[in-house]
Amino acid sequence: MKNILDLDNINFIINRINSLSNDTQRLWGKMTVNQMLCHCSDQIKMACGKIKISSTGNFLQRRILKHLILLGLPAPKGRVQTYKELDQNFNGTKPTDFEKDKEFLINTIQNFNQCYPENLLLTHSTFGKMNKKQWGRLIYIHLDHHLRQFGV
Image 1 (cartoon, rainbow, N blue to C red):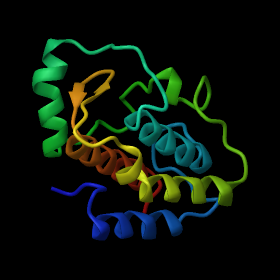
Image 2 (image 1 turned 45 degrees about the vertical axis):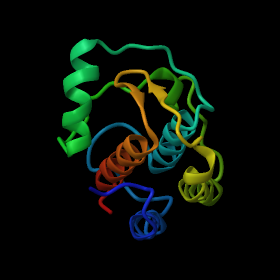
Image 3 (image 1 turned 90 degrees about the vertical axis):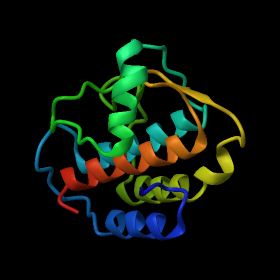
Image 4 (image 1 turned 135 degrees about the vertical axis):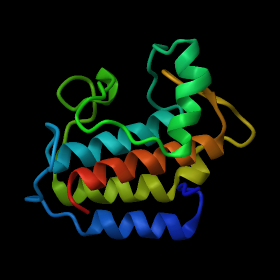
């Protein structure tokens, strides 16, 4: 399964990010392309423990939904509520310069392996404790979802 721990997958995602421009339009949802870049960076910062989000998950989400998502169950387009800490209209990182935000996301992806502590389970607010491999998979799925949102 694809994840951002594999260099080929990292390069594939980065090539897709590099094909975005400041005027790339979304196919669904409300975010602008620049908000999406910041949102995706915030998710990786959350995975590395740099952004804290309170627990919202329940037993079914931690035991069943988590595994379905990691297996590749697609998120319904425009139907998943974003955490306020990752929402650029609330507490998420505010977009600045498009190229700088794009570069920051690319650097954040490339540095995930180094920022995530080895042999540690960090808690996802909905899915509970996750290891590095699970986070790498979830980040890939999240990036893929939002890059598809912008047609790349």
